[in-house]
Image 1 (cartoon, helix red, strand yellow):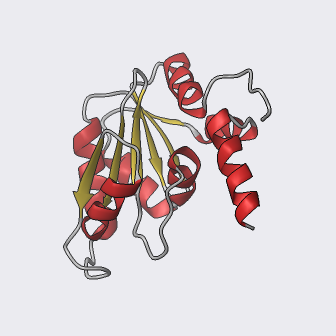
Image 2 (tube, rainbow, N blue to C red; image 1 turned 30 degrees about the vertical axis):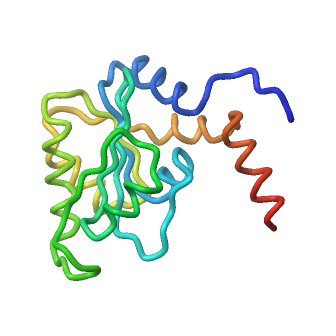
Length: 159
């Protein structure tokens, strides 16, 4: 195995938040759950992650996905949003933005998103300025930590 001499992607994210003076990162979309947690599901609704500058990781998932997310994500908490039943909620983005807004109220927020609609809806519900975290997330992806190297090696074995 290759020795890795740098901090984990989670530690680099927390350090980046502290450097920016932010309390929490809000990461919306499947690339972030796949990269940070190795979690991705076909036909999932929008998923958000909260990563605190001092630690802690919370996922916000559609109500119908709570059981799978609780079982498969390594997070401190899984919060539901939306109506029960796959594809039955016409207000999915507004529901996600409401739950995210409630969780980050009064905190300095940094945001990155794969999805423009949910990002705009969340930004509209956050009090104060929202820092763009896209650049930091791109930088973090460039260096692979030990966990990522193990996952890549396993994916290579399977293919």
